Length: 298
Image (tube, rainbow, N blue to C red; front, side, top):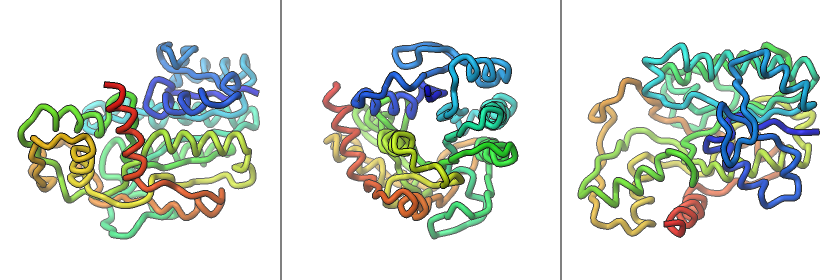
């Protein structure tokens, strides 16, 4: 029975496609996005409820991995309606479609559902959501819509996602540290960088093994470890041997942004690791793998 992947042209969708290219089960997955590409073979507008229902019925879909989202945190503060449409309303449509066919929705959420209450310990799944911006608020509403629908689901919160694909912090730092003599990066926001390839592998394993059945609910998945954006940038530059750029630490108030970001949003992964009997790579090890792909492709 086919598995629907939405948002296939994004970082996680492309990472799932990459992981599946090394397995014999690629044909069981249908990759969709608002436009077709070398990854997305079908178009699907997830803001169109009727289109989702028709697609699910036509293709016999019983599992959906929703990788689609409005992720521009800054722009979301001005584009509230579009952000809410993608992160909340469209998610509601997907959840209702899976409820109607007794299917399962795998939904990717974010550490940005936290941030309003200061903490210095990893956030468990049971911690109350306290988003401090439009992006986090709409993602939290999406989660709530899934639970309210009554569909079977795995909500997987992740953080600081990067990959060899699309736009992300790692690729931006590679460019800037190669071009600029000096760069300032915030040091007072801490979290965990997460390789989209690792998250993709973890999701594919759950689907292929079926071990999520009976264990539906909300989970956290990020790489292991903790760092700041400043230290993350230093690690990227050093591994790329971009030694001519001086990277300086700065505080959040020195960096102009229309939205406040969580000061500490490290996710507690204990539930994922114990439920699925697995380990998670440290962020530095996964960064090495991603940079090896990116730098060897140049």
